[in-house]
Image 1 (cartoon, one colour):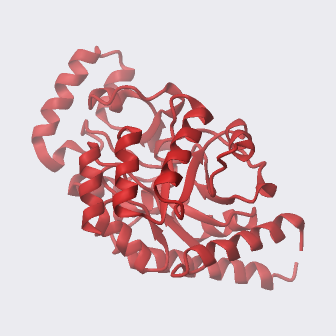
Image 2 (cartoon, helix red, strand yellow; image 1 turned 90 degrees about the horizontal axis):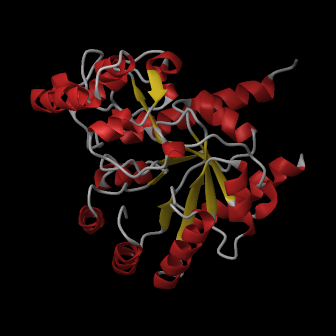
Image 3 (cartoon, one colour; image 1 turned 180 degrees about the vertical axis):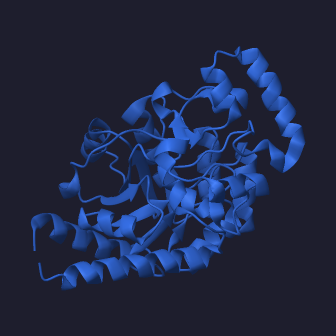
Length: 322
């Protein structure tokens, strides 16, 4: 057994001891803003995965979601952790880099010493800074550029740090899971795949566009346009989100002024589910693996199906006599 895979094996054993209800291969439900609510997080966890609740539109929304089972300032996050004592917290997109992550990690652990702190990174430098930090996280989510939402490009250089490593970005089926595990990941994170879960808080038009889209490499792009049309300001350029291309983007490329794009976008908001689709104008954040998603299923079916596919792929490779 190689050193890398020995480290990965130890990491998986440690993860299972920390989250004993989980089943290998470990599937994590990403904390998608607003859409990953308590029903989805619970369903993923009941199926043997680990579901995260995403931040709400406002800090108080997230606290209400936790009541049912942070997107705010540090004080709001610490108060929520103290009250609800979640098993893990996911941090990313700091404005002040590792310094700010250290501040959040320290305060969160002070509020709840048993909590696991997970940090999403997208570059080698970020992973090194996390590994060398006095407030080292328990896990790193290593996100590739294929992911939907706000991401970064990345590589893998921290296997010996003792942190669990979870692969994210472009994974929507068992083949992607098997590939990530073969590279030494503890488990994988899926976001876009769960957009087509029955438990997800999502408009029908948005969800149907996730099913309709084919060839994510061609039909998605990274752009801040949809953030700005929605009035979401403040994300650094390196966190530009990936979404499905529609008429808003085509008009933008054709040189239509932003004010006119905004007017057309706001009109589309009034059209309900028709606001999504190739001729639509509303944001449809999704990863490059969107073309692998063909139907809406409950979260349990998704988790167990992907796990089963991954095991089949791994077994086939193990039996390969080449």
